[in-house]
Image (tube, rainbow, N blue to C red; front, side):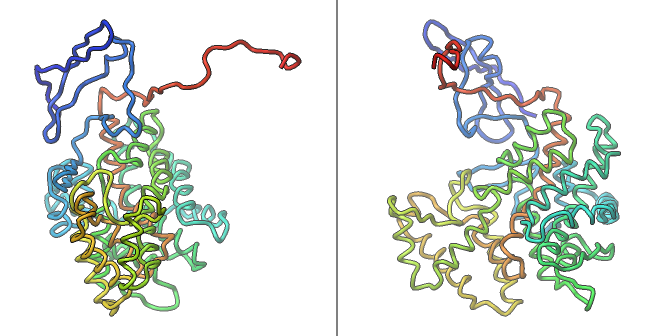
Length: 432
């Protein structure tokens, strides 16, 4: 909980001077409270992209972009990725503390036994065109969950919120896996209670009825890490979308579907796909200098994907963990000499030594290696963003629950800087 401090900020304009209260967070810069600015000064602030505006108070995730630090409930992401499991991280995000052994077992059991989808939902999947993008299917099916599970849509009932939380965490892997199966024209594979969360997802994606399929532990570990690294990322575009939808008192399934829709944008969830496509475009190590020069040329439309981040002005703390997983997965698949991986490693090495990239602080981000891992596992690029959505659902639902419990929460209603026509009178069509 952010605490109030006696200091105030004074804003002077024209003949007015307004004292605005300030708050001091647990971590990060102090905050100027402008909630009374319009009432007291008859002015708004202008902040496109909300880059300097705190839209809510949250105790879930903290990012220090200058240090390259990401904390879930105070725990560094690298520690969680190394020592924890995704479901343990889900529990942490949702309930605020790491679970005891008993709590984790109970939570895991509840999630595991809710992975099945209502059988009538198979018909909903089949209503899409056979060539529908998996994200279109995921967005539609998640939104439709409120029609199948209307016994957990009352946002003011704590028990219904809890049931919706478990259902969303449990069923997203099944929804995403079935979207993939439908996309490639294979039969749906039902979830299994004897597999862990990551194993179950991989099994539902790649198993077929005709033969037995076993999930390699290296692949399930890599997938679990991908889920953990993408579980939450503070007030990003899709999380803010979930909160904005939730502020209207929409049901949780509608709110998460809104987050999925926002994540679909290539500037947000599609970055790892764009990075992989760029590495393939470069093709071979000897062409890297050519593309680095193109990236430096402001007149050239080419952009070096997978480097830099809107928030991080240092090394993305998730990238090192993802790089380790990439080495393990490609080693398992016997493709350590994969041309795309070689381009990625050499591009990283050169960029980190280049004065231009150092000056611009363009360090590799999590997307730089995640696309390579998913590609090596056999996923088409169209599945990269659905997998991202699967993982981020943990953060979305945590943020949504926190918002619902916040007594200061109001319906989102941003202001605008109007630049249209001033007041004018209607002219009859015959006189125009």
